[in-house]
Amino acid sequence: MQIRAGLHDLDKVVECIKRVQKPIILLQGPVGAGKTTLVQAFAKSMGQTGVSSPTFSIQQVYGEDIYHYDLYNGGVDKFMELGLFEELQKKGWHFVEWGEELEDWLNRAGMEYLKVTIAPYGEKREYRCSY
Image (tube, rainbow, N blue to C red; front, side, top):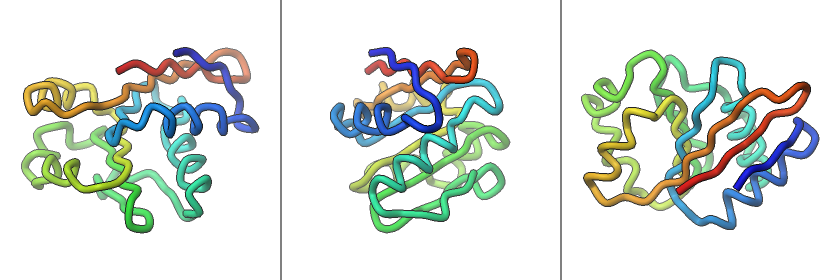
């Protein structure tokens, strides 16, 4: 599925994520593409605020069911070392920024996920969802 959306209509992408019902969402795209912005929009739709990038903390948890990870600095090795792979089994929504290397681990574990690739498209972004 492919959606072109600006900041004012991220609700289309959020609704797509909710419809697909995959608990793990891998967010891919260049720096500044809007990965954290998408997580903010999703969290807001669930009544949560205060979402920020977990670039240095690797994981943020919002409420009881929204988990947000950023593997940019530590990569999958640091993620595994900290035991965060097991966190993905918790009930809720798990958004992973820069999780490309995590795909092999998820596939080997038989865990389903949604991949959202974000690409700049003029003033908007193009969101491609695949699973």
